[in-house]
Length: 122
Image (tube, rainbow, N blue to C red; front, top):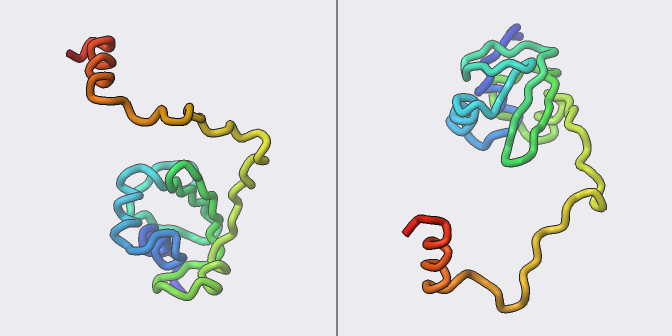
């Protein structure tokens, strides 16, 4: 068995990203860190490393338990990493979404022009 595997290959193999090119793009974009450091897609990943993946506003923390070079089924992929992501905050601590008055949707063209004039964009 290999002692190390490319980061983008592992992220694709354990089904974090749908394609290897998406994994490579995320690594290049700075959305993936290994042991707290920004790395390149070709970084040699080893068992015991901690991988932080930011997908949207959620950051997943994965511990590498097994190195995979080929994409496998979801049950096998789940055994290849240890999910250390903290649970989300309880619902009562999450701010409620902003509510609008009924009928107060998008501004009209006239209102948009007034807003632009007010902000100095005219």
